[in-house]
Length: 528
Image 1 (cartoon, rainbow, N blue to C red):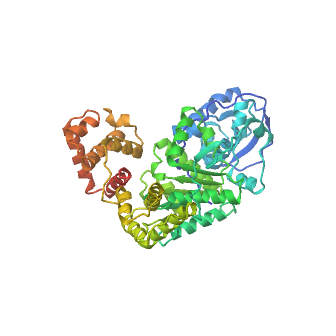
Image 2 (cartoon, helix red, strand yellow):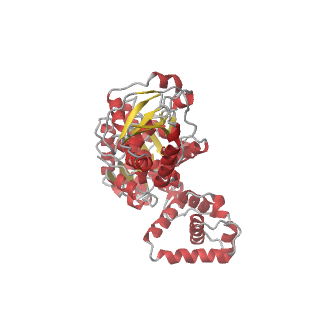
Image 3 (cartoon, helix red, strand yellow):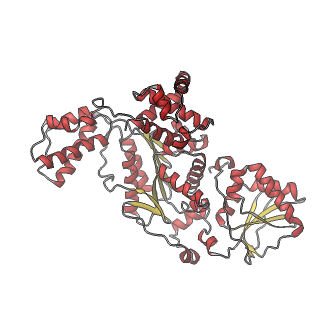
């Protein structure tokens, strides 16, 4: 059984505005030993007036012990009810909170109660029955074991959920769970259209097995983690998994998200002061696919992501993650999440060799010929493309598409000279992409999770200064701009400030291999 430590699951945001009041009914709690929590449904729990200040002290002790983030996420809606016969009773508005407190913070809660209530032997957390529609809409998420049982039994939503929740269907080409719309899915990205070779065979096999076993109760590889450079097939395989799972089980709850979309949706939830509803949207997922993990920036977003991934894995739900880096090279992952992701199958998709490039080109050519059989490319041209385009399958597909469009316009055979002209800007080293300082500001801002305004501001906090210095260093390395011009573009700074930043990064590089990797990653992002 995987143990969850509370320190790794602090999630931000409070359960504000929980339903208050209403007559409550309480079931008889089963006797439990000291050190554990009893979960009950609620009764008319009459708060003992003289004990209320002591209940507030328990809450204060919890805040001091666990920290503001954990307290705000999980205990803000906890209310003291009574102390009687050695039992301290609390209540929460939703089952989700009760389950989480019971499974992760029972000892902390009991310790704090014992410090304040003499003779406290046990703690009960009851479920308050909300009296308004807002609370009904966030009805409790089941514990992992309950989720699995509901999936096996094909459980239907209860009447309250049916009456208060409207879930719009996902648009074609998207996944959706509980009204939460995923990132777009490309209908071309299926297992049938994926070209398999030595560099991607393991990744393809892992993805295929996941698609076949994700709903079988015992996923084959969980989590599945794919990593590679850009354009080698990670996204293709994630889309293929989503399509195949939905083909096998149309009612399966599958959600495909890029890290940027996850972050955007979470920030929107924070702005609307509804982070708990964001958590709730993930509770019924069978398969979660996350793309571009390296762009999962922001401390609060990372905390929420950690919580959701751990909750799904603990509940036996399938998780698939794709990134440009292996887990141990994704700098912002905490050690616990890094270890969790490495526990499943981690596989790299290597650069396509010559034979696989030929195979990809022939497959994409066949797809175009299916549209118009009169379109052909000579073997000499296919070999030329395979020799010159070595970076990614995306380049190869783009080359075939360009040549097909050129042929449609010219309606004459494509010659090697024509092919050379058409693919010139795709060929590595022929016409390198011109990088602008605006590109550097955009990529650095996104990579470090700071705004462009912060990079240009006078703020001196390290969280801003370090990305700004890296941006200046990259501007000097990758553009022809002078130091004064770079300083002007970075918030009207003096050229000596730019020089200091460059020397600072150069000094760090000699003894910091992770910085070197990070700079290479930024350069790669800027070159595409």
